Image (cartoon, rainbow, N blue to C red; front, side, top):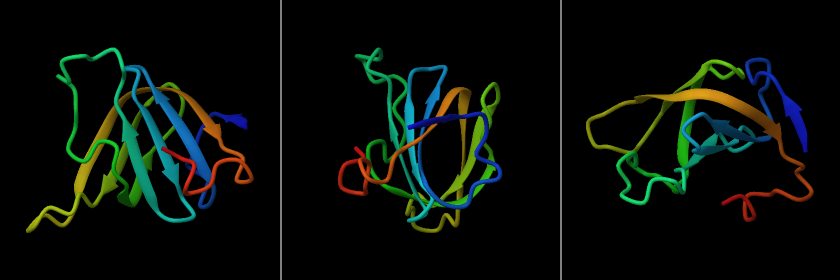
Length: 108
């Protein structure tokens, strides 16, 4: 696993994005999907988002750098909605995952 400061120059690979809120986003750029895992420090699920834990197609990465909010355009599969803009709290860490260890079946 390799720490990174930005994903803006990346077009392939698998990455874990940790945000200030404690949520983790798994981005698989090879397959064009993301998955959000909400923080475990939210027992009442006040900050849950639609499709948490499920794979969601990524249409575009607008911003993803440590110290800034990540901004993704995703397809939540909602009838009549072409795309959804999803912004996170501040990105605290970006880690490139080892494809030998983290494949599509092992990433939560």
